[in-house]
Amino acid sequence: VQLQASGGGLVQAGGSLRLSCAASGGSIFSRNAVGWFRQAPGKQLELVATIFSAGTTNYADSVKGRFTISRDNAKTTVYLQMNSLKPEDTAVYYCNDYPPRTVRWGQGTQVTVSS
Image 1 (cartoon, rainbow, N blue to C red):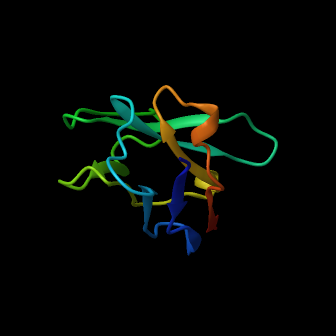
Image 2: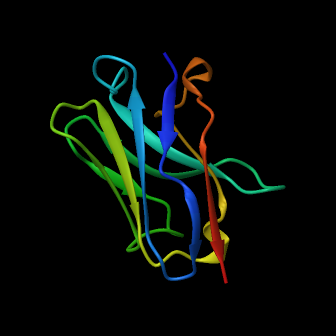
């Protein structure tokens, strides 16, 4: 079952967005962790943040202090709260298991930050 990301959009630098990641039916944690990834035009896929089923989180240095990953108590949805957005955060954002599995990639959601 693919994971579907939503909540992207166009925002000015310094603004905020909240992304959601959901699986259709059941827990989103088919493995022990879920990650948010992003890919900017012409760049490689980048791991942004991870959250383990028990709640432990990790962040890329580029987003530490600005992004927060979380999950709901039912473990059906994972969120990415993005604050103080910068133009370099512009990318398509995806969620997947961590480590990612090919079958779980969804369409992603576009985040565009204007300067």
